[in-house]
Image (spheres, rainbow, N blue to C red):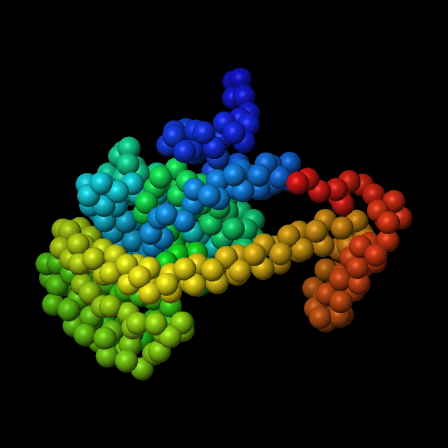
Length: 348
């Protein structure tokens, strides 16, 4: 098969601003790429798109497995499109760091959105570090904003640090919960309650409708003892059914109210400013680690050090110091003095 010709940065920008989905998809593939030779081009593209970003409502959707996140996103996304919005759905899956695979199943469960021209769905970027997954998701969000998607829904697929990761890149975090408040309250993480803006007890239909209402009351009581991490308004607690559609308008109205209030007060601008600073230092951390791992001196000692730490003959702290000392020696000498097998070269 003949490879498609590469696009110039100007061609990417022109296509994205024209809302050409094929160009948007290619741009996302570029910013998700883990190839060193793509890094510089992706950075130039994001810089060119920067004036056209920031216009969307960024909403995180999280919840325990089986709560119906994909059904919820599909249902609320279609409602938004019918109201004249354009919706991008991005998946964040920290487990892809372990499995190395993208999450494709959720896309197949968003049947209506997947076939609607007003939607763009992107599975989690595969492999890499936890920070790398977050970085590529943030950058994909910026591409989508430049392409005119005015709502970006960031869905957590895995578990673990998902909620914190998504809270760092969105304006509002919605947590979906199951009916059955007793069990749910036992397992809910205090950290999530400190971050979340809206709790929506899903599956409030049929035989579980009353249980969902009871769960909502229990959450309201529990939240009285948990101050928000940012000192803002306490979460709104609602019930809904993604399957029947009941309560979905109320959930989105709560999201819109939070967004509008924060925009009017200026707190949204400050929130995004803090996020940008966090993103900046996250990038520094990620790229420094990448450079340390690629350093010729570090690579030469890696097997030995990993073996020593693995068999318990030395501490991780001592090994880390030796690695950093070796890296600093490389940085303090002219490039030609260090072993050179191409590992120290950088693009962009």
